[in-house]
Image (cartoon, rainbow, N blue to C red; front, side):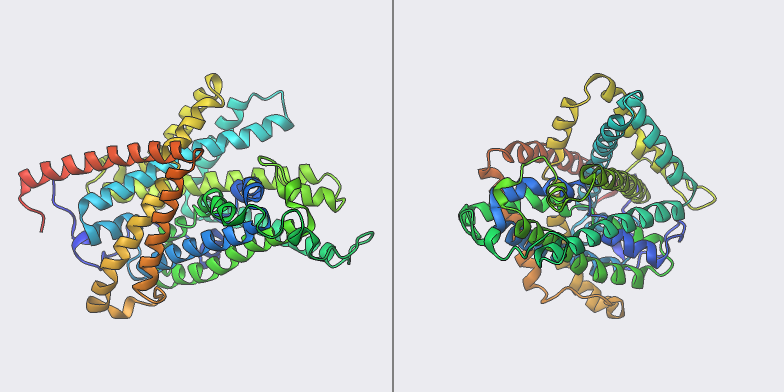
Length: 468
């Protein structure tokens, strides 16, 4: 086995071997649309049911945490763009064990979520065309997006650009209609005032406990923003592109999320929102929009396919980066003439194709268990991002300060605040009966990867001496 590559020792990792086929518009839209998915369109209903109008505060808290993490990632990725993003940063900051652990955990998270998203999209498509079985739809989606990701990175970028444009357009239209209704400017409507915000038990009907429970429900909806920092390595100007994408994404996404929740709980009594059903559909039905359910189902369908595409891309680049550093099989390093890591794409999509069989025999139960196994992995990844930023910021300032084109706010105080916030969410998961199984299973998965990383490090040290 070889020592950790020079890229892990030096902050300037050199040029990436992958194609620079992503344009600034691709990265910007990936940053904006990457987290707008079924978690917002459907999952937000569960948050409203526990927090009431206080869900606005829940989203502000969870969104602030996500913004801090993205600012840290943006700082590191603009200074040191790499296809492995935070896995490379963790290795440079904390050692090989950290890069190995965070890289494989994130890959594990993405390939499982990828299969679940393909299944969810297939369920919608099966509802439209019942003659086509659910497993066949999963197969179709996997073939289409595997082909798109194998041809050229610009195809991934174009898919995500138009997917994100549709999702953002749908939210802007929703916000526009809702605001007109709130102020009584739509036909047959009257200004609603503050009755739904202050009635039904008040703004915090379940107190601060409800707000905190809401944070637990919505925090993971912000997962997916990280892919933009992975994609930056394949852009035309990585150092500037990721900074622009992060700057534009974090504030606008917070606007979309918090703005949506504000108009929903203003227009409708919070107690009328049913968990598991889209509050967006409820609002559109309330406004008398024809076929509101079908319109939103199309948007959710597109959001699922968008997430599938982004997760396939992110997982393939992460495992490629692991292979570059000797932490995954070297065979995964094969790159096509167009700069696409072909074998890394195929390895990442393998479980998606296996899910075709799982859909045939266990269409529901297997994925519930799989999702439990990765439910809290995102928090562990974010924690290592913060720890890496704490270590690397000082090194960047010493060795290449000119690369700090995007700086973390109030360093190091807000980094420590973000770490405290993540610890708080983990404590909440321990105390919440519904979230506890996710945390336990995720802890088992993380412990297994850490054990492999530790054994691997011991073996490497025996064969090559202490790591410098």
